[in-house]
Image 1: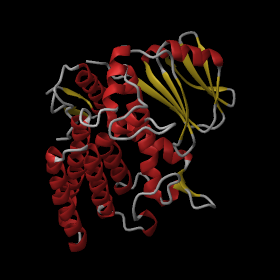
Image 2: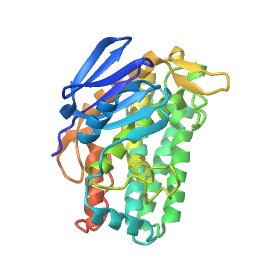
Image 3: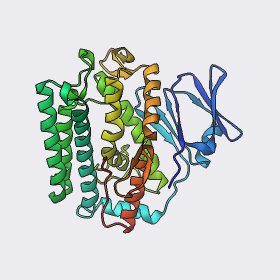
Length: 346
């Protein structure tokens, strides 16, 4: 089993990242704020535009430590990585299958079915934990959504084409996010959710979701590259310049488990509130520096939670699920598996 290594998140705008021996060192205003051995790192994620020395970039590339540069709100800017690992024959199999409508159907089916099932699980948890305290309207909305998501997950099995599965995925997303506000238990007008918005997020809940999705995207891309897959060429998401289609595919089944549940917990437990966001003149909303740090700490803690993988029947940290799913996808492309087993949260 792959060991779960650490990811360093740098949020200070005026930080300087450099190499000292075999260590990553983070300095702020000339004072050392932290250091970590490179061999213990999975990746480095920076927010804003901190300085990075050339020596550190080269050392990260050599040690297979990915360096991702993000905007303060989590929007992707750039990524620095070393030589690709993995078998060129695996990538060729991936590219061929991506052009085969019928051949990639089972992979898309596994992704969409798992996403709908995991969205349903989030709704079920809300009903189990807080159903008695919900008003009749919110309770009815969640119960209806739970039944609809269960129906969508079942329908994926008999859906014959990728385009039809994409339609089901959109139907599941619409149903799920139409009920998302009912799972927010904080009675504050500024923390209401009226639908998904992005690029930029236009309310506080969307800003938090987009930030967590950016973290998940980094992990999914790293997982795919670690197993020799091309993160740009997806099966559910069609090719588009600049879009990591396969990373987005892998994210779909993990969003409800890792990001959505965490966002709801942070809001409902009042760890992040109305004042932890900045509303810019154009209407875009982003997290404050302190709120980003709070979310990152919670993100790392969430990834340490243990669960049992339903296909492998092994206990592992939640943070390793993306790597396991990337490995299962690679096995499917090599012909070792008859289909792709999407991750279903129990």
